[in-house]
Figure 1: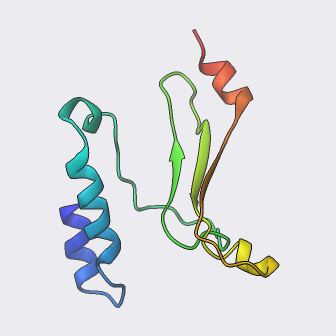
Figure 2: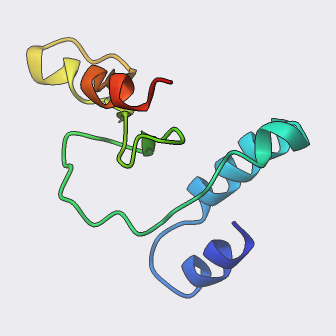
Figure 3: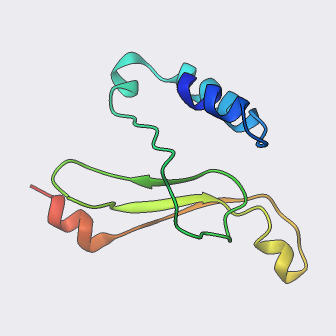
Length: 99
């Protein structure tokens, strides 16, 4: 996160997102934190997200078993602005990872 903050400080993007991630990271216990990886390499065009988006990985799956993010503008497209967060799980990938 510190490296991302330094990189973003030289570009046009505000550092608010990194500050929020720092706050979330600070709330994690050491045992929780060792299972979290921040990867800023997402390059897919996911224009329906309005903020952070994430993928969920578990040992043994070999691929993401879920994904989600902020959808603040989604309901606004239907005439009712409403902040939202959502996710979807890939049950086939979860079943593959199950012992």
